[in-house]
Length: 441
Image (cartoon, rainbow, N blue to C red; front, side):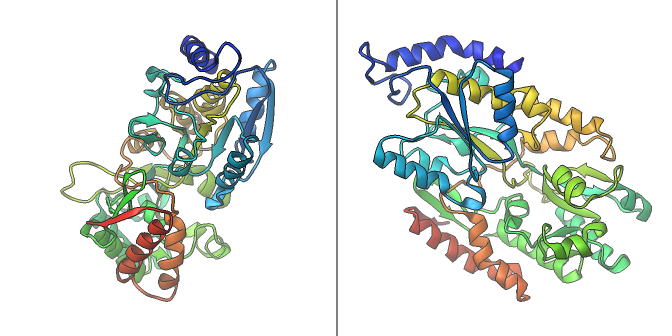
């Protein structure tokens, strides 16, 4: 089993780490791995997971009957609830209560967890570099500060172009390779097949699909508490103009893809849909019930003249090990298994695994299901290494900012381009309110 093999590789280094951190009398002494481990014992490992990851913890317990686990369900910080941060603040004040391992649906937990002294550095003795090298390029960027890795990415949400292969073939359309081609097809679809869509711009994660892929520098994190904001630059403007054009033509929805309105009126009229890797299972197969054999995947369109293909990212999750854990060996064994095991990540996990070997197994299972038209492997694998690294993971929520500043204007009929200055100001204000030094490009 993959998890046990990796755990065996860890054993030597981890034993040295724990021994270095525990004094002979059971007290703690400074270690060489970036933090001071608490006194270690073989007590119960407390693991916090959301409802979706409950299956992972339960499978680990089943495969490791000797492990002593206390599995706790919480909201996973869904929608930026900050539940974890609030509880850690309480535990820091009382000096106890920290979970040993935590899953979060958010990618920006390190922005506060590191400063709060909660999350243990993983590449300073707990995990060997050979293991960390197994993640997709850039996958652990949200977890890394000044070269130190403080969490591990659970899954990727890289964006690709989903499309209805049956209709594209029937209508004689070619899958667009560039954004200008995409825009032209959007206009053509609006004229020739009114009501059909080439995308949606009504969700709070819209900028993560279109503006992120356009290398829009709306929140470039340049330090632990520093951000450069350029939400009105040319890379942002071109994406906004693209969206505005297709919205005006009538082939892009301004409703959320998860709304009842969209499900009732538009779910069966999708020709193209740029979106994250989880759209296939969660949206088309799950929510929309699109019949098998219709949905296919292509690379995200690119901007002409840009030599480096770039895509956005919508979601994903992270695993953190507490720096206060008294069970580092057990915590690291669980962490390694839950992020790399084929038994979970490759065969059970709902999203595209961030760990590359497990992603191959996951993709093979998707292909063998027979749901998709053609092989989805190539586009998804390529996109996994093309997520633009200039979109930062600050302590403030970009989705919340977009929802408060752009969505109302879009609903009122304003163009996205006209709302970019307000978006810029809102990002700056939110960033400053959480202690960031803000610079304008």
